Length: 464
Image 1 (cartoon, rainbow, N blue to C red):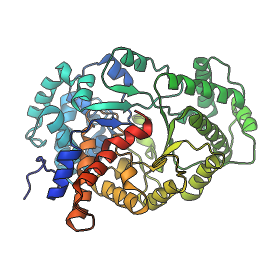
Image 2 (cartoon, one colour):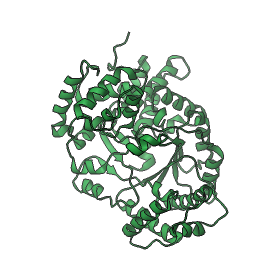
Image 3 (cartoon, rainbow, N blue to C red):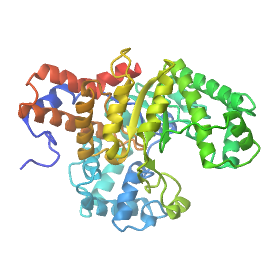
Image 4 (spheres, rainbow, N blue to C red):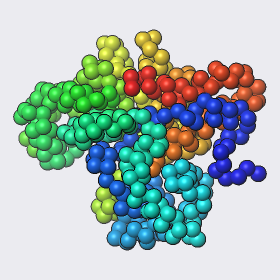
């Protein structure tokens, strides 16, 4: 019997232990996709308590607490910080088998040095111990980033953002590179003309022009992309159910209707979305950016919670949208004109693993290793079985050795041990194949492979 969460956690053979401890454990973290608030890094504002740092806005935990029968007031509602923490602690033993159980105890151990299991009996003591640490500047946002050996953290930012905090962080000389990420989702959603027009007015104001036509919109976005580049941005990201398809109506006609405050049918909204996204991708290629596409989430399914709590509240699920034909057509249209930027594709439906792994291989052009990547196991797939399935499928259909590795995709400063979690699973998977005789025991080469996947490939791919 192996002790829980010891130094060889998840490492089930000697080869795996060697690959992890000698080749990946000490590598810095390049977190190229996160939702960390740049303002909290810029201000280096201390957390009020562990509940604020750990439960505020964490829809993974909120979802688990609801499933465990906990009332909303103890999740996103008006209950006090300690009450919320005690209810989360009461939930934790019931999360066994869910990655939350592993993540929770990895975070307590790595960030706070706490090795006790979190449960109702230990909750009050752990609450106090964490709060004592959080009062020290070493456990404020910047301190945690340094403690976790984060080298780069890319945030997710609206095109209309002034990126003021990013500038302040850079000018402060902070050792961690906190870089913006361009996320134009509001520009792609024309379902509500009133909301969309208000957003376009704001975008035009920061871009320094009046957006009255489709051409104006693209000019404004080109200006914002240029500005983001000047602030260190090297990538874009898009959250879509599936890639949009073109329609018969011109984007100019559709855009003018919306600017007049008129609604357009869903198919025409998609046609406009396709036109905007295609033009954006040409701009990304021109800038030398990496473009990312997160596909397949069914978001905000519960109207009651969306109205009461808002979006990103833990009522999302895996969607079953057709992906292959649309994704292939979109990427091919860019590749045909030799203007396909470096690309990372993320899927949420495990049934599409083979689709995405093989799709990425269709559009590599020999200009660099792994120009088109199948991104890491994402969201509901970011757990042991999901990561293992991702690694196995990627190795079978592509080149695991050229994979750019893991991201947190998180709003929490405490989530960086997810990189350790991934590294342990990767090393164990490779080590298991060595032990079975499926791979040679060439530890120098396999160590280089694991180190590349965990750090070096991403550094080269993004030019960090």
